[in-house]
Length: 188
Image (tube, rainbow, N blue to C red; front, top):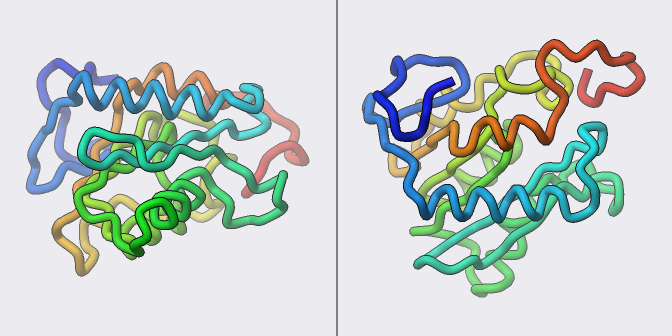
């Protein structure tokens, strides 16, 4: 793990993309909003089997949406925390674009949520735990490197930064080496 206030990590560490090989240190504001995302993730329980994922969207220093995973409750396979937060933010401001906004997520966004970030024109995505920090069940069965995808996307004005409160976020989920029954594993 790399501390948020330490030297920059290698530019190609799996699970994190730095635009133009730039290491942007997480600020106290980033940590504040990530703590809010963690709070939202835990709002309906914090057992790792429920995938307690939280997401907050901030623009101009103000929270414009905060949501958690709601796939089981709705039921809706697209009701990921990031998707729900994007929907609520757009509804709240009355626009379909979130230019200038930062999306905070306790877990590295999946392919669907990455694309939603691109289409909604979020300016920055900050996530806590990455793919290598948690059990494989939280990601697509076939490795889809969404971070490389977004780095190569047609939009070059989106910034993705990972590792904000990485350890605190990773504790929300099963660890990579957890021995879980297959029938309890989502996405596998």
